[in-house]
Length: 266
Image 1 (cartoon, one colour):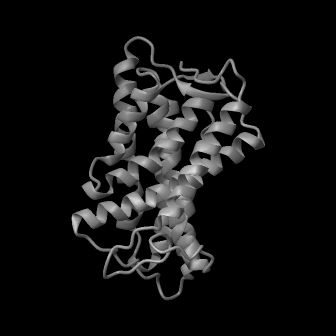
Image 2 (image 1 turned 120 degrees about the vertical axis):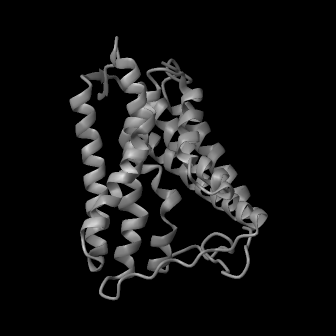
């Protein structure tokens, strides 16, 4: 069981405003520690920003709205999690090449990754950007924004609105990639009401910096091998693998889930 805010009566408008503005508020709060702490405390500011911003939003939501029980509408067994991760891997592959295509069409180039502080391991920095930040971000994206929109919209309109909100302020060439990586956790949450599953399946799309820091990338041109002077597109066979992973994961998941719940919309 999970909880969501009650939005009956006069609270409905306030709850919608809260849901729609949650990501913008989170981003502002995330940056606050960096404006207070000295520059040599970058890592502490990053971790503090994630914890502070996410905690403030969820505590505020509980203060503003009365929590109500929200039943899980599908099981989240290990087999379902495995299917979701397979889909996430496929989406990560496709989304990366969508990003490559967007950069290529816009005439842009791959921006070099900012160097880590001299006294901090690059692996630590990669863990923060690949795991800590995405988890905090996805908790707000799904747990507040997506859950709030579902009080007013059915599944797919709510997904479209949530994706549109995440694209605000992003470069136009990045929209296809961001839309692809945002769709899956939203869809998984609306299918299962599992916040943890949705957050976990957001991580594969952000894992590349960590793979590169650990030198365990697959060595695919355009995926983890990039040229700062020009955009390299992924090989066709690699994109086909991504599509196959998405189709297989979605197909098996639909067979695993209880037939009476498949395609259920609140």
